[in-house]
Length: 302
Length: 251
Image (cartoon, rainbow over all chains, first blue to last red; front, side, top):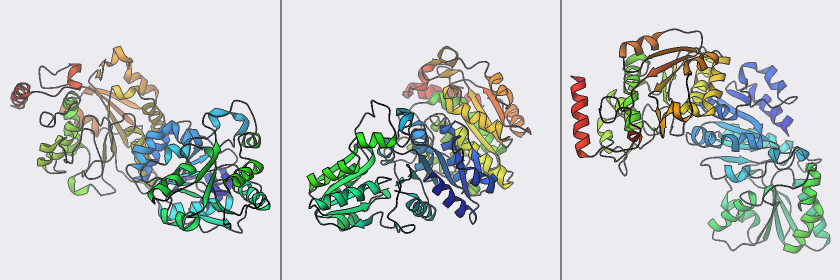
């Protein structure tokens, strides 16, 4: 997904010299292509994320379109106030690009697991939050970010093994229906999309009809669209994020704003991180995010 | 302002008045007519708590009506207790949390270098603000990228919110630190207008750091060098005395 991001940004930068890519000293074997193609539009700010975000705001105040790149926790928690005050408050055109969403850094441990980032970014005023499922959704997200502008957050995880998309999908409503179903709506964000589709198929075999909707844009969530797509059904949400404050919370808030009765089961990581070391797949499988566990939750909700 | 608004930070406001007065009087190339001009010089007040002093100087320089000052920190007023961008013409960055302004200024200075612009960036920091690690992150960045169009000024009044800077988290030798970080450092009297003008006019090949020795609460005898006036609001009697003393100094 990192490569897909850089590829799309590089493509866009060919016709837009205001695009700048800043990194907090990360991106080895990923960002070099951009750097070499546009050396004056690339800046390694060093391991100094607070300064990087303020510098990004300063550059954006001169009408640069800035993408500031780091690992989830370093790109959010470390410099949250710079994002809130310097970027978002002034409405500057800065996209915080975070890699390693969820537990995709596996055995690197707690410091590198991005578990609560969506929760802290969501309430920041004007912040658009993108959480693409795969490289094709990444391309659509980058295009929309450049089209709309303003402060935003692009959360990248580990590229899944398969994609249901034939090309970059239309993400204009923020919701992409990928399987129709009548009993339960499964709203999924990020790279768990193939897991969701496998789980939905398994639930179908047990008599529960599941609609699968990918949510590449968590904020803003369009209340009317959500009702139109998933209204009236019981809902399961699925994300590589704490069950507190992420997609599940966003869906609940949206339904509450619409004054809808709701039945939402939130699937994600338990709050508090993981006690043992393990790969990305190991952690997901042991925290209820495997296809089998998701299928069970769907049948239960159905 | 501070009396009517029952606000604070009067000491920090008085120590920086001469610095900002000289900048807005012409040392920086920005006027009320040019607040949207992409080639204007940029003044960033990173010590946003000194908003009373900042707004007073800006109003007198014509950026907004003097009448706004009467509603400083009033309910429904435009001017609040920390420097805020948006509706106030000429404010370049909302500040109030320390350690943001220098890096923001670096971004503008770098953009100017990239585009071949000759605009300059001035960032006013407090001395206590140098406790923040992000100030030094920005310091490294500015020197590394040779931002000779960036001038930072430290309002070196020696007092931070809870006491002396040297008893809190010693800053000295402050000049040597910035020198070691690659900046062109000069130490000046932050109340002497001629020294300030000369320092602002000097040409450097590196980012410039002016350590401006100042007096917190400058011009009001009972406020000078008193930590309490980081917070306190003068009462009627204290206000009258302060105005008398400041008037006599002007004379």
